[in-house]
Every structure is written in structure tokens, then in C-alpha cells.
Length: 300
Image 1 (tube, helix red, strand yellow):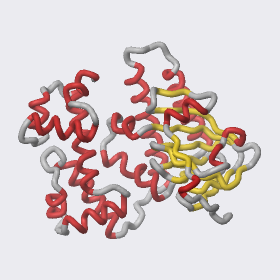
Image 2 (tube, rainbow, N blue to C red):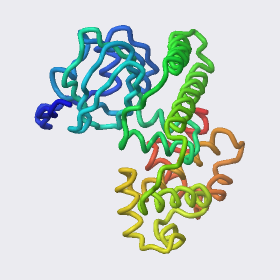
Image 3 (cartoon, one colour):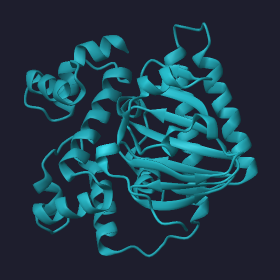
Image 4 (cartoon, rainbow, N blue to C red):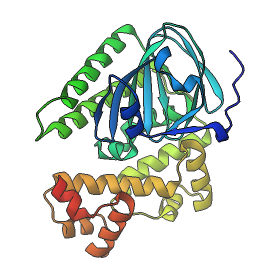
């Protein structure tokens, strides 16, 4: 494996979803939230300077080979591999063959928040994004993923305006579960976990059980018989996000689901999520989403 190149942040190029859709050719996109395109040696700016994408992204290597630096660690990428990138990850192509080509999928954080996937399902893939970004797949896997991508691309260009967004979100959710299946197949047996991973998994289980009632880190720490400070440090070390952020994101996901699908009034949802008043719930929701519960509910 080659030495990692120097990728000082002074040369770092920040790339948004909007910028990708404007600068790349053969681009299929949904507003500034989702982009599908192709990448080859002629259209690979990460060979010139390090890039950081403002959103989640993944590449599926189709032909050729490459050495890719992800946060200063080099990975060998060959056909039938998927590489995952967290938001703000520093990406640099160290070297690649002349015939290297890949599919690229990039999606915003807000788009991820719109996908209705429970925490326990999303956790294994989320953890891979940061700790094991390269996933080996079979040719059949690649063929099936390409079919899913083609369906998404077809709908991105479709004139079916009324439910197009919902259809695309559903297809994206299908792709996510597909990747989750592959990820679990790669590791059929449960690997031995360290204490931090065990605590983190227990925290997520508690979060699924109590997120409609409890939003305080201290509550979850007490359930685990550890201090709030220790719980926060463990969650941050394992997942890259604080315990408080996990709690807020879980509550917001629950709130969005109820607003969109339950038929309950906003006041009833506020009560169900254990907010003292509808006003407090509204301020909390807007703080974390940028929009009010009523507007989100109308948007549907």
C-alpha cells in the first residue's frame, strides 16, 4: 500500500450536492438532496486535490483499480467493491488505472432524515461508514444495485410529479436495506465486541424503547449504571456523534413519522412525545429541522 499523500486542509475543496450536479456530466438528481452520476479518470477531481463532500456518499467500483485515501488512510478499491464516505470525510485519489470507473451516489443529511429506517437497522451500516468504509460485494450484488440505481434514475427523470419524491425515497430505502443485508452477510457471526461497543448498542436499544418519553442523557446513563459523562464519551468514541445528538435525532425521526403518517394532531403528537406543551414541541422541532411541525405536516 502506498504512503498516504499530504492532504492538508489548506488545499481542501468543499463540495456540495448542488456543486456535483452542476459540474458533473451524466447527472441524475433530486433537488440538492440526491445525485447519481459516474466517475472515471477524466472526471475525477480528487486526483488533483483532496475533497470533502457536504453529505453522505458512496461509490461502486465497476472497472479498473484505485488507491483512495479516506481521512489519511489508504484503501485499495477494485471492481465489485462499495466505498462509503461520511459527511466532511477527506477524500483523495492516490492513484488509479486508466480504465477505472465507478458509480457515485451522494445524498444530503436532510434526505437521510426523511428515510423511515429504524435505528437498529441503520446502525450496522452507519458504523461501517466511519470504521470500515470498503465493502466487498459479488457481481450479482453489483448487477442488482445497478438495477435499483436505474430505477431511481428513471424516476428522477419521470414526469410523475405527484408522488415522485415518495417513490424515490422508497427506492432509496430499498437500496439501503439491500446494503444492510450485504453488510450483515459479510460478517455472518457476531464479532466479539469491546466494552464501548456493548455500551453503545445497549444505549441504542434503550433509545428505541424510551425515545418517546426521555430526552435526557442522564436517564440513559442511569439505566446503564454509568455516569452521563462516561456514556457521552463512549457514544462519541464509537459513533462519532454525541449521546445528546443521537437522542435528538431519534426523537425527530419519531416526530416526523407521526406528523406524516399517524393522523394525530400536533398537540396529540407533542403529548405522545412527552413535551410539556405544543409550543415547546414546535420550538424543539424547528430548532432541529429548520421548519415548523405544521409546515412539515402540510408538506406531507
